[in-house]
Image (cartoon, rainbow, N blue to C red):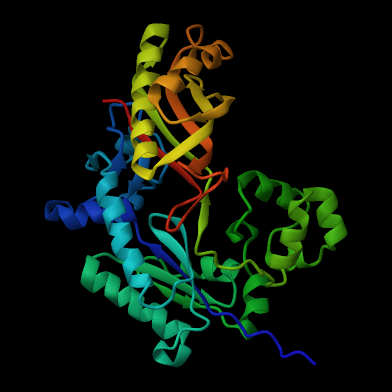
Length: 372
């Protein structure tokens, strides 16, 4: 008879208002004030992040900066400093490694940790999470929230329960009651469109979702049906993966004025290609697929892609293909507010594999900046 599987201990760490908090830490005059990281209020940019003082005015990420400025006229807008955020993220990862090597970063400011086999605090995941938060505060002068449970789904939800500066634990015996009372919008993987569809079907809480059979969920939600069926029962067997596959690297710019001139569009794309090339060279990566992203002035968004026979690693090679991609769009005919390029199907230089395995990287890397 086989022994029962060891109950996992998963921690989800999520930094509170990360970008804005780094700005407030590095520039004391910003502390206690509504800080918005992103485009200026008189630009076409968007909010990348904002402090809790700004959130009190209803401001949130991805909101147009112009609207954020109207909601909070006293807000302080600052340009994103990604180098500073990456440095802070590396410090955070160093703290994690004091407890486990099973670390799965989701972005610069959040990660899963599997501490099932951790010896500190006699294996108490709650006390480990508590000490991690304390070290973040003492060493980095930043604040983190943590969620603790027996799987990734519940740990991630838990980290959001007592934000900011929170620690929330969902024990196995508490899971069923917690899930049944949870609004469906709180479930990871349920976006606005899915939430609306579930509401039309009478699914408003975890208890409602639990009433559905997997066959019925499969019929209504396709491949996602099985996922919804399992999480409604607190089942999530996904492991914490310490090595992530980087799928793409991209950069995009939102412009202060709509672009209509093809020569100017070509010039902007060339600048973006140069920045992507820097990232490729820095990480010694080559790419097989180039994707052009366009957002017109009515916010309609499209992408056009091309895969090369070989691998590309220079801006020149990218720009040779850009005119063909542009021809497949309405650039020059419709005003454009955003342009972006990304590369995918990556591999390390000198390796045969078509995938890049790098510890501590998110699945997709995009930097979005307003054009200055």
